[in-house]
Image (cartoon, rainbow, N blue to C red; front, side, top):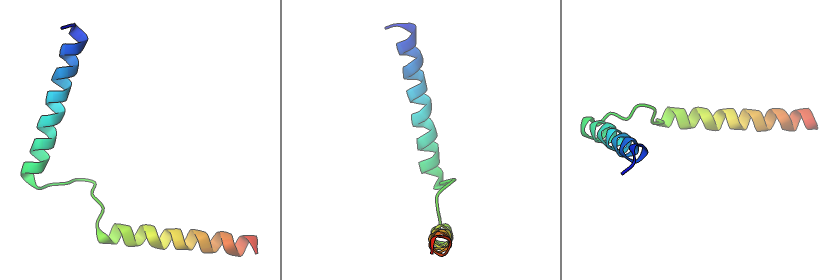
Length: 56
């Protein structure tokens, strides 16, 4: 195995440990909640309405 292959295997192992830690702790940083989805939907509607009014 080349040095690059060994480094890549170590990186894959590190990533696997990170995901296992996240899964074991039931903590999902960065996940969207219902409030986040509602805010995205509201902003999308506001943007569409604004461009519709602007183009009319």
